Length: 395
Image (cartoon, rainbow, N blue to C red; front, side, top):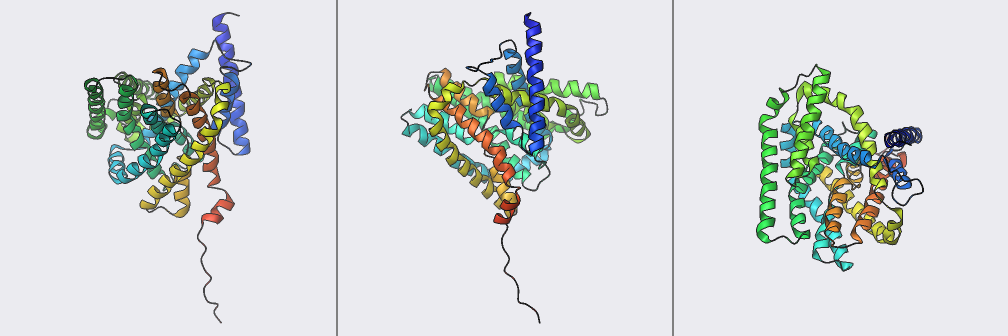
């Protein structure tokens, strides 16, 4: 079969399969994310039916999926809400970093992997997956919930922190000199600062570049600006996801509302490809030897992340059920964790880090949506709802 014909056949068959999985997930009342991941594992490296012709398409589609997930997440916020979130959630961000990065670092040191691997594993266990959480919030229709701004504030702080963390890790894994590492960090700080300043100060001006009622022009313009900023951010060692998120923040008013409606179908398509590709890039045979330590680490850090979200929601005055929803939905790790592991392994730091990170992310990504749905179960609501003592019986 001709290469282009094989590409169409593979992509078409996979998309049709994802459609059936999505329908199955909707029928049984679960998020489709775990099913997409498991489908990727069955079709990826080491499987009986690996995808060859469509590999590059799925790789690019997965990168575009992360960008679309993050720009859509940013469109939910205005620049004012971003500034308010950063100010009000500083303590929650510090608590989040301490409770979730330290277990990863300690775990690496106990395995004898050394300090650089400890820094890498700390980042892997620290940052939740904004893409997965955004998808779960949408699947469970919680975007308008009272606890959602608290959840998104934590994600914003984590994503911005990655803009500074990744350059530092890059310098460590390549053994860069102090001068080079400092220069890389300064450039990252300057880029993020400029993007934040432009978002907060000129958001309305940026929105005026687009015509809200002209669908074709708006779709092309917003998608083009998002990819342009994400590409520049990636080039200067700042995450493309951070750049895309800030583009979404910068847009407001009718432009942001209409852009959400236009980009939603594209987001759904490429988000599914992102989760599929994550499974495709994993060889199931490398996971088995590290499955037990990965499961132990997942249990520990799901508990610490749940505590983080619970406490942050409590500080924001959210009720008990909302606190649990905020904590449980933060469990998944994803795109940033894989990027961090790739940096470390590419530099030859620790060969077992990649399969451990993959198993860890898979476990948290599968457990996260399931735990999030558990918070809406009747038995869970009864368990967390405070019982009120009966009053005196009147005569």
